[in-house]
Amino acid sequence: MMTLTQNIRTEIELEHVSMRYQTDKSEVLALDNVTVDIRKGEFVSLLGPSGCGKTTLLRIMADLIQPTSGEIKVAGGTAKEARLAQKYGIVFQSPVLYDWRKIKNNVSLPLEMMGVDKNERDKRVANLLELVGLSDFKEKYPWQLSGGMQQRVAIARALAIEPEILLMDEPFSALDEFSRERLNEELLSIWSKVKNTVVFVTHSIPEAIFLSDRVFVLSPHPGRLSTVVEIPLSRPRTKEMRNSYEFYELISNIRDSFEGV
Ligand code: ADP
Ligand code: MG
Image (cartoon, rainbow, N blue to C red; front, side):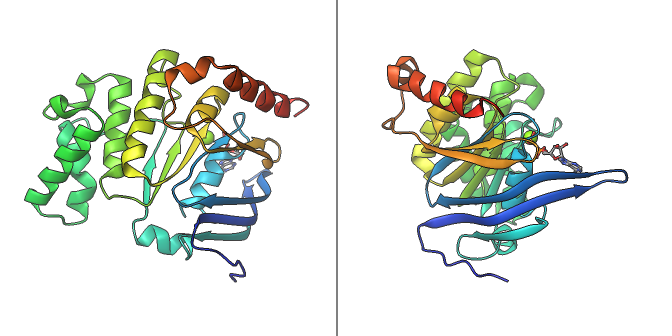
C-alpha cells in the first residue's frame, strides 16, 4: 500500500525499507529500516564497506528484487512501473559486453531490443560513442579495448535508452587509481550533458565526494543509513578540487563517521 506523499522534484523515495535474505541455514538482515529521498537530476552515491547492503539497495531501487518490508516510489509511481517504462539504465561492476559484437553493436543492443529502426539506431549509437569519447573505436571488439574503455562502452549502452535514472554499481572499482580518477571526470562531463538522476555505488570515499551532490553513508551488519553528507563543492568539479583543503576535510569527516562501526 502506497502512503507516501511525493512532490514532483523527488525521483526515488524509500521509506522504512528492510531486506532479509533467507538461505537454507541462515538469515541475513541486509538492510534495516532505510529511508532515503533522491531528487530529480541529483547525483548521489551510496558509500560503505563491502557487505553493508549497497548492491541490495540499488537492486531494490531497480525493481530487480523486492524488499521484505517498506515502501518505494520511483518517478511518482512504483519501481515496477518505472522498470516497465524503461526509466532505468544500469551499469554493473564488470562491463558484461558481448565479445563477438563490435563496440557499435554492443551499444546498439538495447535499441535493437526496443525495435528502433536501423537508421535511427546508427544515428543514436554515433552520438553515444561521441559522448563517451569512443567514436574511433566503433568497429573494434571489446577485447581490443582497455578496462576503462570497456566500462565507457557499458555506460554508452546504459544511456542508449535515454534513461531517466542511471544506476551504477561500483563501475570503476576494478580500475587502477589513475584510470578511475579520469573516468570520474569523464562521467561528470557525460552527466552534465545528459542531466539524469544518478545513483552511484562505491566503497571509495574520494570517489563518492568527487562525484556527488550528496553521499549516503551506510554502515554494515545490518545495513543502515548512518548519515547523509551534502557535498558543497561547486560544479563543474575539477582535478584541482581533489587537492583542496575542503576536499580533505570532507574525506576526514566521512572517515570519522565510520569510526566505531
Ligand atoms: P554490498 O554491495 O554493500 O557489498 P550486498 O548488498 O551485496 O552488500 O550484501 C549485503 C549483505 O547481504 C551481505 O551480508 C551479503 O552476504 C548478503 N547477501 C547479499 N545478497 C544475498 C543473497 N542473494 N542471499 C543471501 N545473502 C545475500
Ligand atoms: Mg556490492
